[in-house]
Length: 114
Length: 116
Image 1 (cartoon, rainbow over the protein chains, first blue to last red):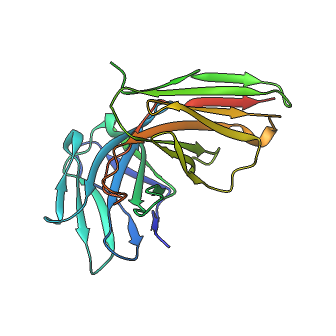
Image 2 (cartoon, each protein chain N blue to C red):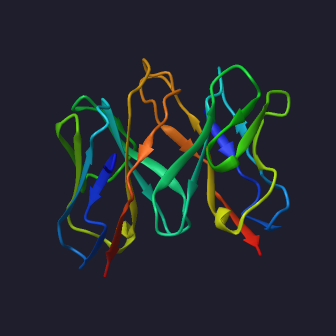
């Protein structure tokens, strides 16, 4: 069965510092991995995805993620955090097949302190 | 223009009532979904429709009944509401690439349901 894990409930980082939000995956077949962000009382916004090709994926708002097959990880990164990046971040895997659903991790709350 | 829209945004109701949530997408997508986000922010698929045909029904109680009048709309009707139904319900849509799992899903703003 496909699954993703986000080992940290919360990540705290100072504004201007680099940030990493961790995600590991377990899939059979090719992994199709996604990051979404949820701002307070808002819907989910798509940040980026890995389908194939370059292991470093660039997305919206200066975020990027690195796909690492040997470590089965897909960590979200940003070189310099902003206070406005504070939000709930979800890693997800696309199940493919007939159901074609997203399977989400438990979410990581990113808090960027000024 | 909003790509995926939901109404209402907030819904407060009494236990035992019946309510509906509506979803519309103007992206021309074939597939629409309902997800439930519980109080711990955990997100889980409930239903999926592809071109008005039910594809996914993830062990959701029979009190929940989705209806897709056309491929741009997916509504969720809930009978006999229970306290445990309180959650945020998200609609999403995508254009699946032969069910590959590659296609990005676009989410609506959510409907915050509170059952008293």
